[in-house]
Image (cartoon, rainbow, N blue to C red; front, side, top):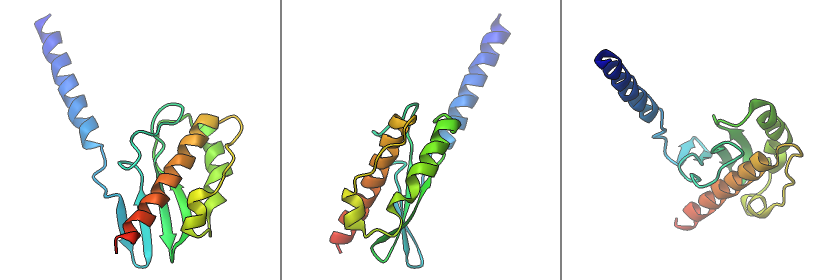
Amino acid sequence: MNKNRILISFALIGAFFFLTSQTTNEPILTKQKDITIINTTSLATDIEGYVAQTPVKVYIQGDKVLRIEALENEETPKYFDMVVKGLLKKWNGKPVKVAEKQKVDVVTGATVSSEAVIENVRRGISYYIYANKKK
């Protein structure tokens, strides 16, 4: 009985350290040459899809959205793939001030995940605009 408790304790401690090591230390805003990348992982912790957070990276070049990249999440792959295919290109090529306010329809069948991705994109673009106002 004591051996089982010890093993369970070690397993729980190991799981804790594994999970805490998996959190991102990536900054919100990074630059690669003339491209600014906004990572919403820590910027939008309050936004959840159907299962959990749905972070994205927003790539911006010359004050235009270059592309949106979905990051690892826990959404159901079948439905989240619908979101990726139906939403992520909607902002490409748009000036950031237009993209920030752009109305984007959700993907039918993946409404909650769509709403979360849309809000992550808006939050990322708003962060970029705010960060560039300070300069």
